Image 1 (tube, one colour):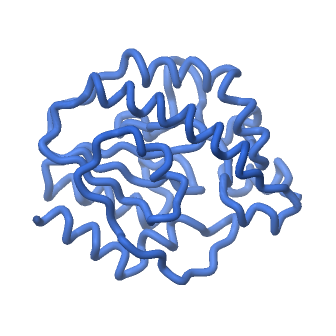
Image 2 (cartoon, rainbow, N blue to C red):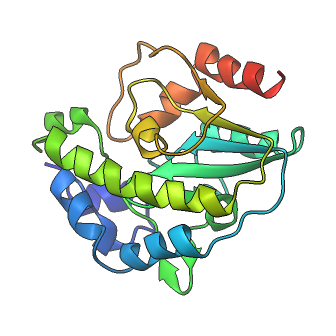
Length: 214
């Protein structure tokens, strides 16, 4: 089983209340503060700046994202210097994490969480539940859909998420022009190193660059 001590080692700034190692924990926190109010904010209030491209990207284990603590977010932040894009992370349990909140500070709350919401969590002694996962994804997908209804001013929407990832389930009710990559890379992941390894894989990263230059 994962411990809070392990989670704090990975993310020293973690909000202990947002240590969510099991699917049940993630489902529960959707109705508890500060996540409940955050989801309401994303669904009903947040307005994104005008950019040509909305780029939806995966959340990663090491937080915050700005300043970046992993290779993926170093690369994503560099993309802002080349392309007219707006970055939004896709997340369990926060649904969407707009770029300006990548420090995970919002209205006095610390939103740094630890939620390894993947079937491989069973390696660490937790039971994965497809039923619970569907409830989580459906709730977060509604939030994402409501956000886009208000923020529909982008010329293109690109989702950077592998085909079998939960991230695609969260954005399934959104209009997305391009999904990349179209394959699952063969990579061994762990609690400490997971999505960062997948999305910086050379072929996976290249698929994103190709989509941006279309």
